Amino acid sequence: MPAITLVGAQWGDEGKGKATDLVGNRVDYVVRYQGGNNAGHTVVIGDQKYALHLLPSGILSPDVVPVIANGVVIDPAVLFEELRGLQERGVSTERLLISANAHLIMPYHRALDKVSERFLGKGRIGTTGRGIGPTYADKISRAGVRVQDMFDAKILRKKLELALNDKNQILTKVYNRRGLELEQILDEYLGYAEQLRPYVADTSLILNKALDEGKTVYLEGSQGTLLDIDHGTYPFVTSSSPTAGGACAGSGIGPTRITKVVGILKAYTTRVGSGPFPTELLDESGEWLRRQGHEYGVTTGRNRRCGWFDAPIARYATRVNGITDFFLTKLDVLSGLDRIPVCVAYDVDGVRHDEIPMTQTDFHHATPIYEYFDGWNEDITHVRAFEELPKNAQAYVRALEEMSGAPISAIGVGPGRDQTLELRSLV
Image (cartoon, rainbow, N blue to C red; front, side, top):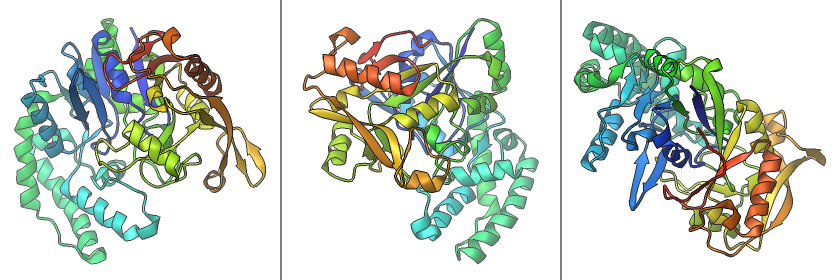
């Protein structure tokens, strides 16, 4: 049976939580495979709105096993706060599984993230300051602390001693900040250990056995393709791989087991943080999109930068991820526009580029080349079939589909669980 990967096809914030929630009653496992609490999903069920940061969206579906896999970095305090918040609202969290190999965000990671970003000044990347980047850096340099380390006090102490010998030197001598106390951190994380123990498992083994038994596994990334550490707008990217390839390394599932890759596209484009954004609107049109789409970060609350749909980015996401199906979200936000611009290519110093330019320099200087589509005034939030959409809305969707290089299999016409048109099954 299939392993299905869900990826953001722009700069994140495309509505991946809505897509995962849509298929929640048709899959057995929903797996978060990368990132940390620097991202979030919003899921609306009836009149209830849930903002999830670390937990997979599948935790809201009672028959799904939600999994935080090895590719995720975990801040235990944030995790327990999120679990408590759901429990207080009557959501069961007892099915959650957490990989023993997932890395932990430590207090020195948060401290270094905040102070280093501040010292970059105008060159800042736009991180959330939650310690994600420094945690992944320690993971790659083989100096990280994993979930399983909390269950052995001697190993945890030794790892903290080695880490603080280095981190405190940087904090005190480079940034003139106060060093951190080993015993305080040790006590805090040993305290988390017993709370975490019931959830911890060999998640790679469990997921592969589930596939062998004919069960369906849904792999859910955070952020988006253009924030991938390898394939994004480097260095203005996240510190992990939210693309489909990252799903394999981040979950312990082999690539031959993935049968479908669903890309999430917003009907326009947004991004948070610094970096190039060719279609960004710095005028009233951008502010209108922000208001209409409620474009404020789930995790940070920051205003999202807004712009028109960018077809070269969609094509790039299709190519990099091997996308088989698109889920187009927030089509309803565009209601009321007389005409809708779509970026079909870029102009870079007088040269047309139909694909994303190879170099960061050219991408920074790319100017969008637009085609214009007739808009619609009808409220489409109550539409439940593609044929019921206004003709101009149908034409807009079909044009995006052709430009993006993969079929649009579902369309979001509102934030609610029932406000989705499913043209083809995503499972």
